[in-house]
Amino acid sequence: MTTIDYCERIPNNVDLASDRKLQRALESWQPKFLEWWQEMGPALPTQDVYLRTAVDVGREGWAHFGHVALPEYRWGIFLSERDPNRKIAFGDHKGEDAWQQVPGEHRADLQRLIVIQGDTEPASVEQQRRLGMTAPSLYDLRNLFQVNVEEGRHLWAMVYLLHAYFGRNGREEAEQLLLRNSGSEDAPRILGAFNEETPDWLSFFMFTYFTDRDGKYQLGTLKESAFDPLSRTCEFMLKEEAHHMMVGTTGVDRVVTRTVELMKEHDTEDIASRGGVPLDVLQKYMNFHYSVSLDLFGGDASTNVANYYTAGLKGRWLEERRTDDHRLRDAFSTIPFIEADGTLIEKELPALTALNVDLRNEYIGDCSNGVKRWNAILADAGIDTTFSLPHVGFNRAVGTFSGHRITPDGKVVDQATWDAQVTDYLPTADDKKHVESLMQPVYEPGKIASWVAPPKTGINGQPFNYEYVHLA
Ligand code: BYC
Ligand code: FE
Ligand code: FE
Image (cartoon, rainbow, N blue to C red):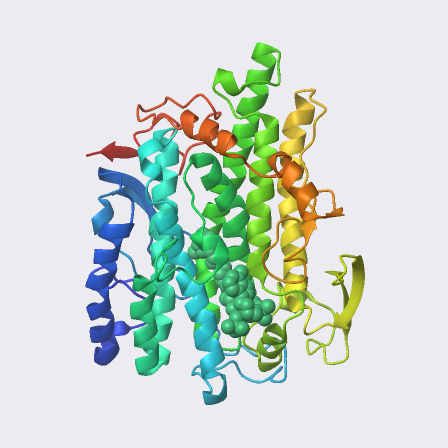
């Protein structure tokens, strides 16, 4: 059953109507979600927004585009189609049938993974709440809202699993997901990056490039899970995630493109006073968002991840394409590490405890593709500066590198040296003030702010000057 029934109060393809108890529980969570959306969702009042809504989970034509009033957006529960023959691909249970229910001994761990995943989704909506006030174009404003409604739907996806498979405990966790808030003193979001601010659109593009990309990789590992409903949920979420990646990748492309234009027009690198973001400020924003996102992969040596893998809860990125035994009991991996005295070394670890680094390496490889794109824009314009990703130990708060000071080019330095140089590495108060000063909203169709180039293509074949959003 793939088709989604929009006559239901909660659109779904999980035959919710046949489980009255579950349906009632979710229907009583729904008004709390809507209240949260009113309070913590997009602050800019709009009449309607040109949005994509999921209508099917099939390979072709899963989405419908049209103008929708945001509060009437139909958040629903969509799982990819079930493969009745699906087998577990890794760990101790490799080769057995995938689980349709939660085994008692893995209940706590699975619930924890689902709660952490669920917590990030509304957090990002909260972080982006005020960005509608300063959108560089209607096209961008529409993309912001598209990302926001889908992150809201990703919360629904995790709440469905909590309600359907984790009993009373799961229902309580679902309530808590609406009560923690990004940046809150008393009840912050669980992971560090989701308590940072996303105060401006350069940060938004960097966030959707670097932090949503952690989402892509984490969802990729949960898609491998032996717990089939989690796997199917994540598979469908990944389809939506592709758009968030596109917003980040092309967003940074467009800022770099505009920076280069302004540099050529004024024959100077100093384009701050000319309505642009200078290259060094772009590099500092990359350094910040990349390093904060690396923290999301957890510890470099983690018994948690070893247990998740062995139990079949969380696999590797593209597990089935790996050519080893998919159990890793006797395997070793070499990972970058730092000794207590500050010496950078390569350390050999059991592959199982190094799995966070395995995933992080996949992520780093993907991030470096972005840097290549942006450097190609510079090279095409004949500019000989290049962007680069900082060292993996730079500005880290989680894992082996936390508590050490490592420069972007990988030198271990003392605190005093760090303090003297940090303004070259991370956005300063002045950099942020400058970026903020550029954030003038442009809401006229076809027009765009000074600091970013227009997109090469519009959404769903519409032109850039299409009325993507009608403001209230
Ligand atoms: N902040 O064994 P360790 C997304 C804790 S983004 C705070 O090293 P583990 C999205 C950890 O909880 C994807 N605490 O790490 C993007 C543990 O605590 P306990 C989100 C942290 O467990 C944009 C202790 O430190 N999904 O979807 O192997 C927009 C030792 O942990 C942090 C997931 O993350 C941190 N950064 O790995 C919207 C998937 N890191 O147990 C959405 C689910 C670690 O000692 N989560 N700790 O109290 C996981 O798979 C894992 O929990 C983690 C951590 C990868 C996060
Ligand atoms: Fe998401
Ligand atoms: Fe996302």
